[in-house]
Image (cartoon, rainbow, N blue to C red; front, side, top):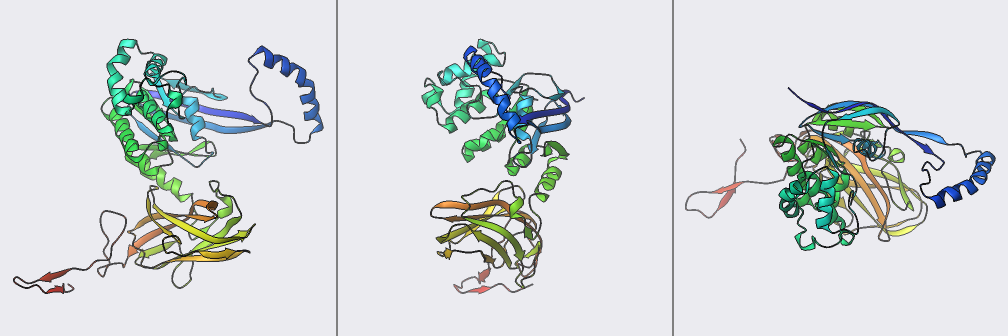
Length: 429
């Protein structure tokens, strides 16, 4: 019988925008606050926009987690993922609703969470263990495993304030994973580590769940990691749960909302960044007949067309486009840098195209991110600007596609008869 370890009922977190929500804690702050209060009130009364506004980062969130579950949480920036983990880890308290736990919680939400800057790595291991309620003997029993996994033995007696961000994360994760909490909460902070360490973390989280029966709550934009690790996922949108179910179903739902087929809504993309001197305004995917399409066959031509506006003219502009699969793994990148070309200048609004011939992708769902840069600076970066499906293939003469992998490679076969050095192409069958 499954054992419930977390129960969340009608959880909500509200913040006030436009005013100071923190209360002074020191005598000096109390005195300064009392003196300044009349002026602040007068300023609010004389200002049309001075009223406090309520912002609900989370609202009406309810779910249950059983012992040994590995639950992924996905969603766009601002969806409420980090707020949810802060509430679960008791860093902040809910505005409404209730969270019920059974067991000790270890959380890794930000680089250096729970570390005392002036203490050494060794001292912080014992400090974190004490916070989790473990005895010194229990911590010593796991000490060597923690140090070995983190790979910081040379710096164990160095104050952690001198650690790099990667060292911070390695030690913090190792502590959280090895000091036997019943519930492990992990945020996107693992992205700071290198690829090999990230994989070790995923393997460790899987081990603590399947072998040790502990519960893992994992928030990440790395959908490949979520799909590899989690059997269940929760999709957050606008502070509420949109879908809670099997990971492949939730990931597919999340990806379907990131782009709108053959057209790109650049203006509505919340994750874009850049200086903005050159800014993408619209775009579309076309086939070789110039027709807008959101579905293609492997072996077809794919044309990516983008419109742009110019706030300040630039010369020698480059454009990169990353093509990713449905898990977020980058399959390939096309770039003016690789072709040894560049746009000579952009002085007024215009368009550009990238023409990919013989699309070598197997059936599946893909995304395209667009990056425009000039003067060694990002002007506009639009993640997941386009989404398209490959629904079949005529890349190979047989029209068959590989059962594994994501791309197809043009190739030919030939043979030489026994005793001959002459090769000839195989005949079609």
